[in-house]
Structures are given as structure tokens and as C-alpha cells.
Image (tube, rainbow, N blue to C red; front, side, top):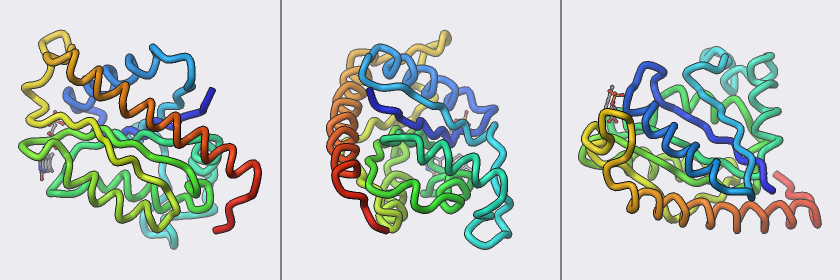
Length: 189
Ligand SMILES: Cc1cc2nc3c(=O)[nH]c(=O)nc-3n(C[C@H](O)[C@H](O)[C@H](O)COP(=O)(O)O)c2cc1C
């Protein structure tokens, strides 16, 4: 059983964001090999952006660091805003340091034509600095507003459920391997 922090960068008012999160947690809930901790950034107190290292040492940063530190891996769920991921996600990334290291991250993205893929590619660059291992496969919702029915269910259920299974299988592989490796030999940052 791995502890997985599901870091949601959606705007709290976003219907598309709520659909994607609900669908993903349904997929995660089917499995008996992971325990999700939903870090909903729109509803999580974050450090002020003006402080050095986005407020490291503040109560908000310590609380976030404890949740990231307790995780064996991450799923980042993100929309694309102006060809990047939302600022709230950068704030959270910058508020934590060592707790990210030597752990895997998987991505679920959504947006317009690009499905959030440009946001994911930017995340890969940033997370490399923090020693996060990013997974090749992603799940992306292109033109997300057309991908769910009025009840919030995905229209291509077989397609996206299959993609989520691949994603989570790979995350479990890396999460298990890296947890064993960190236990055998501490990773130095
Ligand atoms: C400020 C802003 C910038 C956006 N920029 C992009 C973008 O560059 N590429 C893209 O595919 N979608 C972009 N979108 C669309 C979002 O990724 C997303 O699909 C949409 O906001 C989700 O629906 P919602 O409005 O219900 O949250 C943008 C949305 C906002 C609010």
C-alpha cells in the first residue's frame, strides 16, 4: 500500500476541474494498492508568494511539507493556463523542498486543444530540479468541456479508465521501487 498525494490545481469553482478530480478519485478508489491524500490547492492554505522560497518555515509550508513528506508518490491534476500550469501549483512546489525528492509523479491534465500537455511539459522541467521522477505516460483531456456528460461522467469512459490504469500501474511500480531504495539507502539532496 502506497500513500499517494493527489495534488489538485483546479480552480475551486471549475466544473471541469471538479469532473476530472471526481473521475480520477473514482479510479484511485478502485485499487487496493494506494491510499490517496487529496491536496486541493484551491482550498489549502498556502504560504505567501513574497517570502523567500515561497514562505518555507511558515505554518502553511510546514503543513504542506508534512503531507508531501508522508507521500510515496504524487499525482498532479492540472489545467493549462496560458501554456503553463497555474500559479497556485508553483507556489506549492516552491514551498517544499526535500520532501519531494526521489519520488515519482504522474500527471492528469486538461485544457483546450492541447489538453494541458504544455503545462505537463513545464512541470517536468521544474520537478527535475526537486529530484522528482516524472512518468512518461499521462492522462489528458483535450477540450475538456466536451468530455463529460451532464452528470459529470466521462463520455469516453473505457478510454480514460484504461489510461488511468496504465498511469497508476506505472506510478505504483516507481513508487514501490523508490520507497524500497530510499529505505535501503537514504537519498541525499
Ligand atoms: C486564465 C486561463 C488561461 C487558459 N489558458 C489555456 C491555454 O493556454 N491552453 C489551453 O488549452 N487551455 C487554456 N485554458 C482553459 C483551461 O485549461 C481549462 O480547459 C478550462 O479553464 C476548464 O474549464 P473551467 O473554465 O470550467 O475551469 C485557460 C483557462 C484560463 C481560465
